[in-house]
Amino acid sequence: MMKTNLLKTKVLVIVALAGIVLASCGKKDTTENNQEVRVPAKVEIAELKEYPVVHSFSGRLEAEKQSNLSTRIMGQISRIYVKPGQKVKKGDLLIQIRNQDILAKKAQVEASKIEATTAYESAKKDYERFKALYESKSASAKELDDVTTHFKMAEARVNAVKQMEKEVEETMRYASIRAPYSGVITSKFVQEGDMANPGMPLLSMESPSKWKVVARIPEADIARLQLNDAVEVRFNTDETIDGVIAEINPSATNTGNQFEAKVILSDSEPASLYSGMHATVLYEDGTQPLILVPKESLISRGQLVGIYAVSQSGNALLRWVKTGKSYDDKIEILSGLTHGEKYVAASDGKLFDGALVANK
Image (cartoon, rainbow, N blue to C red; front, top):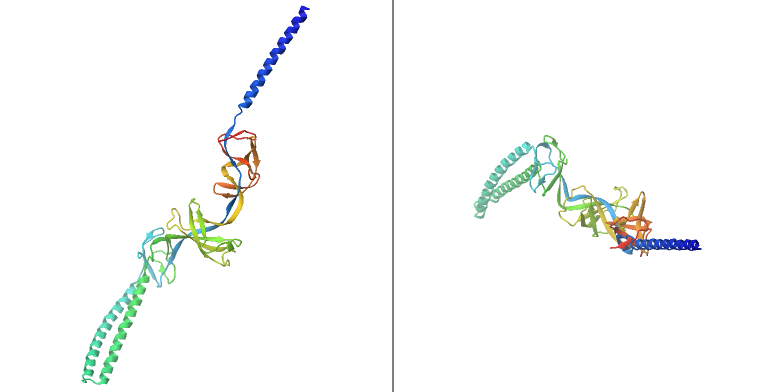
């Protein structure tokens, strides 16, 4: 009997100890659950808002003022004073064409001018003298007519020589090619010793004081544009400059079914820009509802793109989404995230599906 009671006592002690152990374990698990780690993150709400519709067109940067310099005379190029990239001022001598024959003709004209001027002055004196004699009735009308005719012929000869002098001076001007305005030499088409021909380009230059962008506009978008519309022009240097549409070519016959529009930049001297650079013309036309999220909030896994949505209980849930156009540092969400849903825009820790999120 005593053995039986002792055995029952031992069993009760063992059961009591097991209960204490189980109770302790349950308390430890509860404590660990209450202390579950939360990932600090920036939580935002997806909103369907009206955003401007931005159309983009490709273009090329050019100087508004650019010229190909040529000559009207034939002659050998004796000296070239500039090279591509060199800055010049208005009136600087750029190219000298051999002009000995022009100088010889100039000397002949100067000699003819002296001769004609001397004859004119002598005829003028005779005319004034005979005019006075005729008024005093000391000379006949016939004598006055002869002297008057001689005087007018001498005067016409002087005028003719003056015109010849202007022609020689004009020819001399085309023998010395000078800068028509201050700018930069962009190309050189000849070398010293080459023969220059009338109309043949010798140099090209441009003035970087004012810039334009020649943009190609697709047929579907040409009707949207109007003269004097404000636009933005973006370059690969991340520089954005305001502009205005100054010209629209209504014909696409010679431009491959694309229309040309000229955009004048408002900035007179944009930094780090050079003629020929690629440009993107941005044009706003109306609005449309969009959901935009920061690009840094997206997760890429292979060809899939996802974002962490946040449930009502605060858990991060990985959603696969379909994206659209980019707008600076944001991107359009076409599907996978709806208006009013919370999502993780950025996190300080590593997120995983089901992780608790603490909004910071």
